[in-house]
Image (cartoon, rainbow, N blue to C red):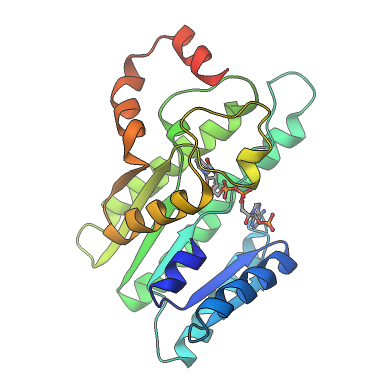
Length: 237
Ligand SMILES: NC(=O)c1ccc[n+]([C@@H]2O[C@H](COP(=O)([O-])OP(=O)(O)OC[C@H]3O[C@@H](n4cnc5c(N)ncnc54)[C@H](OP(=O)(O)O)[C@@H]3O)[C@@H](O)[C@H]2O)c1
């Protein structure tokens, strides 16, 4: 997504725990788009205070360029979960802290900036798993994505009378470090390149909700509430 946004001329603020990954991404982007400004900072989104400090530092970076922070994408996520009661409570809690509590910290920090600016676009990267409960390793992951969907909708209602937009993106399966770790290739998986292009296109539309790719996931969204537990089990296996 960072590369796709850079191709459109966007300046970028990128953060994650592994600074070396950010540095190589920065080099890759600058080789193609040397005119784009890219700020990178290490951040663990489970560190609430640090999220605020890093977001404020990025805001200063943009202000020095004479710009505002016009969009924040709450993207950090992990899926380290396991079935309940099998001794992996720590991993399940870590997934919840990253995907849900980390998202709350990021949304708080982003909204402080957007309220000051009276402008901005908050984007929450949820998942198609947000719409029903999921078994096995995805139980906590799906719950965090349902929680994120609800958080984003709540903030969207808050912002109805303000020029601040809130979008929730529901990706299906897209090749990434996370999905490559899944033993069996999930259905309807699309390439990282195609997925990134479609995500960026969906984000730029600034709609309340977007399903990526639209087909087959929008259709799934419609039928999911009617699926039996057995059908959901099959879907997840
Ligand atoms: N790929 C899919 O099919 C798919 C489908 C639905 C939803 N999603 C969602 O899309 C988002 C991106 O996932 P992805 O598929 O691109 O997975 P990924 O390749 O594993 O990327 C996850 C990103 O989150 C960062 N991250 C993880 N924990 C973090 C933490 N505590 N603090 C800061 N950064 C952290 C990682 O960087 P570091 O490890 O360096 O911190 C990495 O950049 C996630 O929210 C995921 O749930 C993905």
